[in-house]
Image 1 (cartoon, one colour):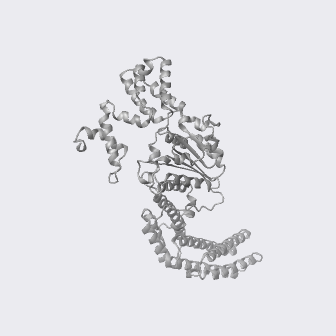
Image 2 (cartoon, rainbow, N blue to C red):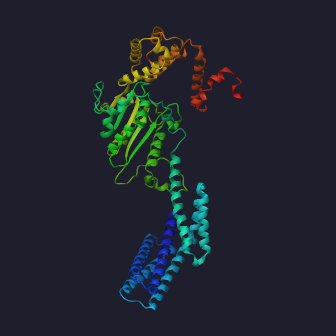
Image 3 (cartoon, one colour):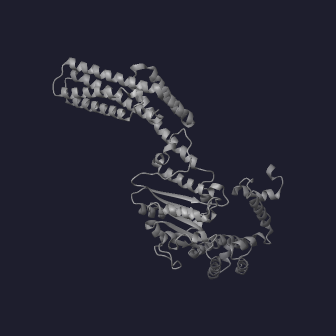
Length: 542
């Protein structure tokens, strides 16, 4: 039994045949009646008859022996071929009127036979298949019902159907097939999507202006990295394999990854790498507090495949051949089966490997999986990853392609501190520029490249500046701030500042409860109401 799209294609081809047959009849009959030069008409009828024979041959070759409705097509092809030979012979002589009328009758017979074959095809299977498509794709029911109504009209018209009706059906068939293809693509893509896909990437804060530019500008390897062989910019253009961006907690790895993905220079360098080949860039940002698919191998694969298929939809039938039927569900787990001569090039950005959490996959297994993707792609795929400096990553990714971020961001930290404190009136108006710069350097040196530490400390310093612009008070605050993030969090939570302590402890309590499986996942927006809940019991009613 042929599938709906084969039937659509076959019916469209038969419609073309009817067009050609009609042209042959009209042109042949006008040859005798015309008083003008008949060479053009001869050439036209020869060309149309040749196309008719070719289409019949295609139909015959594409029909299986079981397709009973097509068993008579070879005979029709032979008859048309005979007419074509007669036409070629007639071009060399002057035909009599009886010859033209005989040819007119034979060609009319061909058209009637084509009509019969088309009617047989439509009656045998087309109506049922259309109903199947309508039932499985509710979003296009109106269009497909219109197509079915047109087929029903033709079925009731017998052999005296008009070319105008066939034209309308042909247009509907072509348009419906295009829509069905789009529906199938969307069905597969939607089956790959999951709640939370891309949410971590969107939540990552953007970099402070003019920071991180060095990453896409520097060609030379920094002196702090004696083992590094390629700068990141060179790796984008010429490198292969995996490039590892490591750093302390809070060093700004995710912010840097987002900066790279969105920067126009990154796209320019990648186009230089790809040349005239198709380039696909996919990203996945793991997030430990997120849902299962936001931190697991399943989620990683689904995110990458969704990006690839959305960018290169032409490969969908090759990757999902068994699920290309729109009436079937589309599972996400697939093997790579792209068979083109010019495979696309892929660059994957995978952030937060240390936040990967999969009970069936350890960090080392994840690393080996990523390495197999890069090494087994014949240089068609390379991967940029980021993580904390944990053994599973430091020991298994090559040091020759590792950037230790916290050793390179001193200038970026300085710009962030200057931007924050420099915009505060009490800081700039109550102190000399030299004293301000000295204090900025104190903050930069103590930060050791950890941006999260910097942002937390700046928040504390800005609170002090609201009260006073005294550098002595700012230095005292800075001296009491721990250098390690964990100690800093403890200090902030246990400080004597009661304004935020109650709210902070409430947030911690909710986070601890949210770690239980039965607890509903809360968004950042939900947490913003904790202060109101803590202040009054009647808040939910307000």
